[in-house]
Every structure is written in C-alpha cells, then in structure tokens.
Length: 115
Image (tube, rainbow, N blue to C red; front, side, top):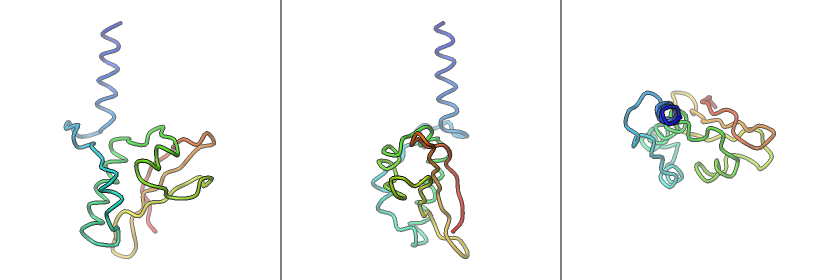
C-alpha cells in the first residue's frame, strides 16, 4: 500500500510540471503576471513564459473560476464559458492564453490561440 502511494505521488510530481526536473520552474508569480504589459515586446515575452508555465505545469488543471481569477485575474465575465488573456505580441497579432470552463465552473481546457 505504501509503495502504491509513493508511486502515485511521484507520478503526480512528474506530470505536474512536464519536461522539467526543477520544481522551481513551476513557481508562478501572479503579481508579476498582472504587472506585465503584453503589448510591450520584452514584458510580453515574459508574460508568454509565464503562460507557458500555466500550461506546462498544469497550474489550472481542475481549478475553479475563482482559483483561475486568483492566479491570472479575470479574463472574462462570470458566466462566460471561456476567458482570454493576452500574453505577447506576434508578427501580426497577439498570442492568447485561453481558459475554458465546464458547466460545473471548473477549468476543462487551457490552450493557446491567436487574436
């Protein structure tokens, strides 16, 4: 039984921050996120890195709308099925971090799109 629990914990740790052995790489800073201007090239690039962290580390997996708001701020209205966050400029538009909510108001999908 103990071996099963330890193995399950290791799987959670490994999959919660895919592709990187350094757990500190999943330390998301909400204050930094909110202060960055996505229209500025350098600040937008950093915001893009933080958005990658949200996706790669699964920071919103199963999160509620309130938890999403605490992490990223409000990206839409209280009944919207998707919230949108501008991350960084691209050649012709902006990269967007999209967060979809299910009927139970929890995150069902987090992905990137273009404006």
